[in-house]
Length: 218
Image (tube, rainbow, N blue to C red; front, side, top):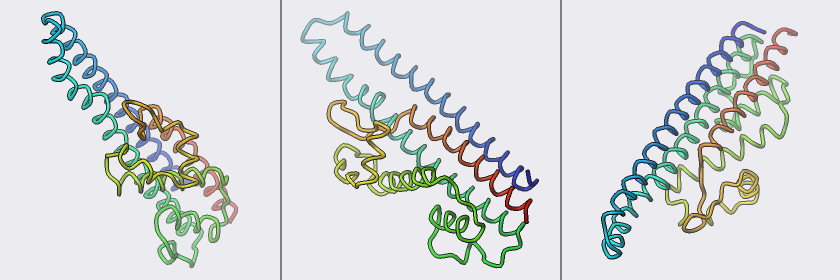
């Protein structure tokens, strides 16, 4: 594998591993937080009569909502946004390596558009690399999902209809991201974030392998 491509891939894999470790540590923290609040509730429940327990339920309702719904949702949706930023940044880096190593006159910065759209165009039209279409489709659905999360904010239940676009809806249904808690809402959870990291690892290995192959044959 081309040395520059290899080094970039190693950096990507290192960052993905860091992100995975971070996710696991956060999940441990979150599980402990949820377990602690349940334990505190049960302990206090034994000390009250029915009327006191009703008051206790109301008191802990906000705690459970925060620890079990709002906090995880805010965190994991933010993690998705971070993943998407990594994708955009690293795709651009691989484009720049191809541009430099192949001495291409057409610069990636000169193409219309930005982010994933521009990188895909550069790989396909200029570098002549055709990555599996289903993988690009996955990235574009992530782009749609990320844009909704960023622009609509954390009130996923109140704005669920905003996610009702054909391709995005199919992607959400495929990954079972709509859950019924107290109401139907979009849920970005731990398992989906782990899936994303696994997808990114495989995708960037393919990008690196194909880019290196083009450079070595030039």
